[in-house]
Image 1 (cartoon, one colour):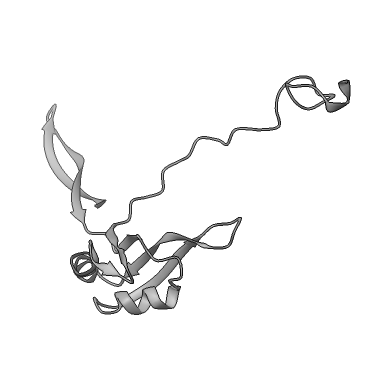
Image 2: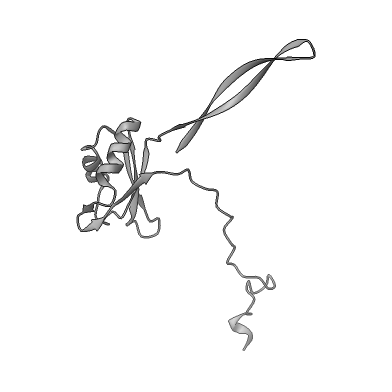
Length: 138
């Protein structure tokens, strides 16, 4: 669930003066972006858009592709135009069979920060670039 904050202003008396105190109030709202997992690898973005159009107006449909191979990773994201349509899509497609695979549909979470990638250039001294020495040492 995504949260948005609405200010709640109260006047309180401190030391004979009226002072405004702003309290932030959390209110839950449903996000319109959905995670769709378990997609067949041959699924296109147009097919995904057409599938979710049964639940309402689709704002965008994206399938995540592998950078190295260019193939689908088997999951994607669909953005619906309203919270009610997003909830209807979850109820309609979660745990349902689609082209022989079981779909997982739920609210998309924000992407978490990842730790920095590890450098695989090796260690050791800089002449041979690795910890195991050079092949030319025989």
